[in-house]
Length: 250
Image (cartoon, rainbow, N blue to C red; front, side, top):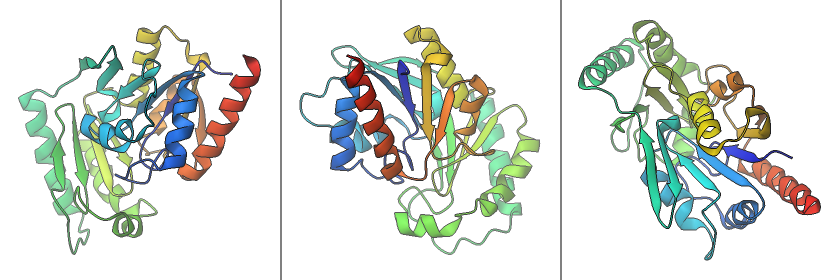
């Protein structure tokens, strides 16, 4: 079995912007007892606390868990408490360039957005995220808006030309994530290799957006074994299988 299991968050461990459910929380705790685990997602640190860390059962051990917010531009490890290992922040000039081109691409896309819930654009320091329906949109609204990614592609395609030096990916159900040049989930995986001293061939990445253009897709370029999942329910079955195999090997 692999020494490190890496997960995406939204659509993989939990529904978009939602907390993991009780069954997932128990399985995740059990997984941490038998192997190293990491989560890489477009959300910032508070989202990980809300969706995962605060939902795990009492006495969960975090010593084998690595958290990589904003698509791997930040890295947290647990050493009596959560410690930030690194952060790749935008410069002021990079931030201005991204926001200018993002706003132009949105304006020129002619996409109809009738209602929003919360801010559409969020500056996470090391990542800028556009959420078409707003950061607080209801899951059902988001799922129905762009389930074939066609609307977001109208924004992403021109951005790939105007922001060639940045990494651009579609995550969740309505979002577009922009990070520093060459920094994406592949970057995060390579950082895991460097910091944890675990080979790429000993890693398994699980995500729901491993298709080309999805924000999990860069994981494939690392050579790590990847599994595409439909939803958290399929992820649970994979975790159960990993736990069973690891337990039998002990």
